[in-house]
Amino acid sequence: MTDLQTNILETERLSLRRLTPDDLDALFALYRDPEIRRYFPEGTQTYEETKEELEWIIEVYYGRYGYGLWATIYKETGEFIGRCGLLPWTIEERQEVEVAYLLDKRYWGQGLATEAAAAIRDYAFAHLPISRLICLVDPENEASRRVAQKIGMTLEKEMILDGTPALVFAMDRV
Ligand SMILES: CC(C)(COP(=O)(O)OP(=O)(O)OC[C@H]1O[C@@H](n2cnc3c(N)ncnc32)[C@H](O)[C@@H]1OP(=O)(O)O)[C@@H](O)C(=O)NCCC(=O)NCCS
Image (cartoon, rainbow, N blue to C red):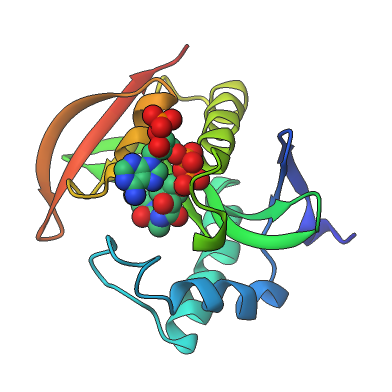
């Protein structure tokens, strides 16, 4: 394992590690899927857009912030089943960190996003100098709302973010 593949955290069923350029095809398989990307304002992504996002995650998020979206691996099979992690935001001039999650639809409904998000929450409060975390959720994305609530967040407000309605869930350091 190279430095670029540093393991970030483990849960009972999942292992989260840094993304590498080799993850492009697996990430694109998720980002091209209209059902998985349904609640993302920009919708599905092309191979080139996925490549650009992956490069941004590695160079800017990991390089500048030391965190970002991480490859989410199903430990039992070693399969790449999503990307979950932390994203920096500036919202109304306030620095925020979002817990973000996206999984392969074949793995939905098994509590895996909640398992990942809870571990990411704990990791963030243990390792980052932050006092709160947020989730930004499309109002119609019931599953995502539930994950935010299940890790201890409450609805703070609804806002328009980049022209799209978004619910802001938030929690203070626990
Ligand atoms: C959001 C997402 C990560 C949830 O993953 P998941 O592993 O299925 O979530 P969990 O199994 O941990 O379920 C969390 C809760 O949501 C509920 N839930 C799951 N899918 C749901 C759906 N389609 N509608 C309503 N509730 C749903 C579950 O029942 C559970 O709540 P409960 O314990 O009270 O029953 C997954 O649907 C996904 O990857 N979606 C596409 C990407 C996305 O929209 N990410 C969020 C962007 S903000």
